Length: 330
Length: 275
Image 1 (cartoon, each protein chain N blue to C red):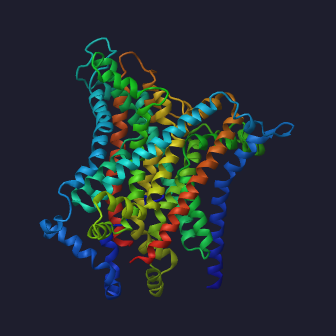
Image 2: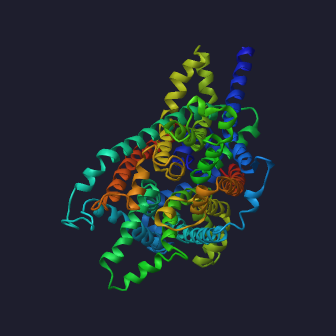
Image 3: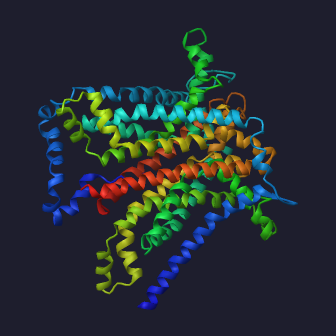
């Protein structure tokens, strides 16, 4: 996770510095450039030194492992979602779209919508809260603050699942320390609700946002701000017309990353809210453990397919954005 | 102007303070909750852990799973990534796709798919030797199916860690230099490239380790009881102990990830020296 937001394509990175400091930086970077070029233009000459096909051979174990361990479940989901369950009374194993139709109806549709709603809300809040924190860290005079916040973010962004749920139950749950101290229950507070879940999710989403937006904020040049101020722009105008448009792809990319994490989360919700907030991940787990009507055994696979479709759409937005934001901020 | 600047600084401090409070409070409250007692303080939740039924078994299972997963991830990824640096760009593109795809499949969906595959065993393969493989893979003493799931889940993390490490090292030049000095292929990789990747290897291992230690989804749905699932089952009966275990597991994860952050920082300090 800590390394996730940083992949900046090297060609873009060398581009802006090439104008000013090309002669100075040249000695070390020149050997790599012809080497790369020669693989493209004079492929036979470049390949002579390497064993032919050896690179694919070295990657073979990974490719085989992936084909089996990822391919088989994918096939199972794809076929299972479209065939009648083996426990159904009529037509077991036949092609059908019943599973899929059932998976976007009634309680399952509610769960899917509620999952999407929760993920979108927490991702939006995470983005809005994470940006000022990241900005405060980036512009801080103290290097120690920066190091401390970024390290803590790295840890907290990975702190999901059960421990998080239990920590919040101990803090804000019905018998939690803070609940008892401030008599929150009398004010209508409940951790085991949509709001409660939002507060808990933000605990690992905000650090994730700080981590993923910091490189982009680092990339904002001081000169841009100075240029804007020299043209009599106020701080607000600078943010509205200069900084935010440049940051927009990174912000949207971060939002999508947060959405994906919140959408896939299962353990936290499972340990905390039970059935009070319907979530698609919980529906799948329930369906897998047999809590469905007879003949709907393959429903879990159809629900998984729904979930993968949503996640795939999200990733389809994220990956191009990440490349685009690298263009400005290198 | 000076007033504006000081106001800005005040704003920055306030943001960090509020954020800090929000992030520290649950941890402090958990620690307090786990030692809170009507008669004062008690450390029973911590001392009673070792004797709790299932504690050592589940911890031992998790540690073995973590070790095997880390080894498998490294053995699969490292040769492939080094080869991709040296070989055709097409392999790099393929690897990037392979290591990003697991992100698209949430753990719950992956588990559903695995269960779908495992069902083929009794359904279609009863009389074939493959059936024994299915049984072997699901052995509750050491469920290989969990290792498979964990390796898939950690592929994106480990890939990013290793790839950024490889990016900082000019593998091609290193290998060509070693080859020119007469080193064989394996020797060039093991004695020249791998030592240069120590930070990245540690990074990838720590991330994988942290993932396996905290993983709950796949294990609980598939019906095994590694540490995270054990904590959950304890939480239903003994709230205080489950919070105590959470605090402990949090501490362990913190130490692991802080070590990782330190390793990463070291690497980052070194990289500016390179152009």
